[in-house]
Amino acid sequence: MSSLYALGVGLVFVAAGTMVAADGAQLIAREQAQTAADLGALAGAAYAVGGVGGACARAAVIAAANAATVTACHLDGLDLTLTVQVVTGAGAAEATAVAGPLRESP
Image (cartoon, rainbow, N blue to C red):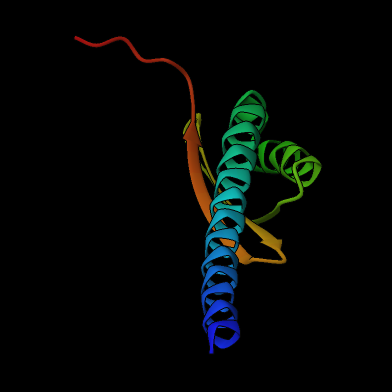
């Protein structure tokens, strides 16, 4: 009977470890998506003066270098809003970032 008890306890630990690992992998995917969005938005905003085409193209290059795909890119004046998606073995994660020039407060 003690062998069955030990097996049951071991299975509980394996199940708990699997759940913790899956949560950790999803957290990493979310952080990777946010990093790609932040860096892509910053890079794209540097090209905002040239228009939406150049800004979004530069943002897409940087996002791709961070294993992300651009799902939306909008230029409002000199502010670039970038949404990216990262797909990993743990699933997909999406993040949005906004970058633009520093504005003085009144």
